[in-house]
Amino acid sequence: MHPVNTDMWYQTLRLLNNNRKIWLSYIFVIWLLFIPSGFAATYEFGDDKPYSHLREFDWDRLRPGDFVNIYRKNKPYKEKLVLNCSGTRRKPITIRGIPDKNGDLPVIDGSGAVHFQKLCEYSHYSRGLIVIGDCNPSNYIIIENFELKNANNKSSYHLNNLTQRYTKNAAGIFLWKGKYLKIKNCIIHSCGMGILTNTYPNTDRFYLGYSRIYNNGDFTREAWGHNVYIQARKTMIEFNQFGELVSDGNNIKDRSNVTVIRYNWIAGGMSRQIDLVESHKYRVQDAFVYGNFITHGESIRNPKMILFGGDIGGSRSGKLYFFNNTVISKINTDEGFLFVNQPDCKAILKNNVMLGRKKIWFGSGQVIGIKNLFSYGAETKDFLQSYFGGFEQFSRNTDFAFQPARGSLLINTGVRKLPAKVKFVPSPLAKAVLRPNDGAIDIGAFEYIRK
Image (cartoon, rainbow, N blue to C red):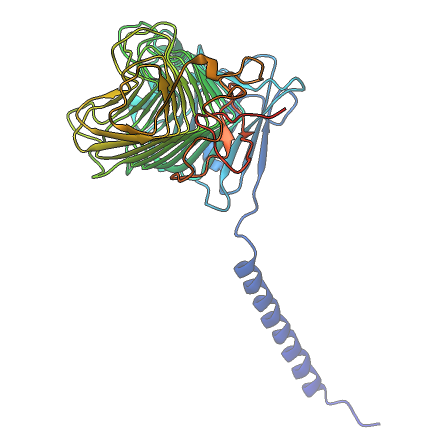
């Protein structure tokens, strides 16, 4: 046997050990490159959950991909909430209500609520039940499955053991700074504004869907209030149910650069149901309004139903594409359905049902249209291939009001070349209902269903 060279043996062990460290370091670097920098967390609130109250949690801890599950309790959550956090496009932050076994949503009640977080803007303390982006832009946030109520100027909240009043324009959700905010499947009522956003560039990419918004406004009834007032850059409002307001105001007021309002059930309001007005941020503002059911409220102070133009001295220059809507007026008035009040505004109407008024539009803008159905005797000098009828065009034996009756003039008579495909019908239940497709398209928001 040869004698062992101990010096070489120890050198070999030392080399192997150093190589092991190098390989471990290499593997660790690879792990850092390909594994997300943080794991998404889930936080739970409720009677038997880790957190019983919203104020027990540090909301600034939220990171991209996190979920917050807030379970319904027998009593409402009486706390205001401030979000100064951001997700990412692939990993949004989701604040999610968990309904009870009956499907009832968790309730956040602003009346007597505790404000437990510090704000950067002092005026924001009284501006909302949920305030988003007060200190920092808060991006890629989803809020879903909540009932939000009672942030209005007849309600109060508690701040540092003092009782404070909400402002007249306090909102159920107030977005100050942020982009890609999504609000889904919420009930928002009894606030100064159901939802209120700041203007671009502070806000961008706003989405509201599958929600019920009603009974908002100035509770002293001295000023206006709106169910929603949106001023983002790009806005999508779909599959919602909008109802009556508590004061004079609009169901949807919007100053966005590009607005899409589709498949909503809009029934109520003392003033306009849709108010599309100018913002000085944009040279041109287009809007796409289609597949909606629209009617006014029981108490009316302003009979204009839809405005496209300006209200603060400017103009919403651009085009309104208004198609496959069913618009119903129940009052006797000489005013038209649509007010286009600026000369550089143009509205294009296709496949709409507009019943209950003889005058279709007025103002200094331009309006053209094709294949619409109007009331008998309506003024149609600006429209091509119009149809005339009344409520006999609708069936009385369907689940949804205002579906075409058998033999109706509405059936298969719409123009097919449209700015977007009409895939759904509006529902008073704030949900997506597919529109039957038989190869042609009916006039109005609803399609004839063959039995």
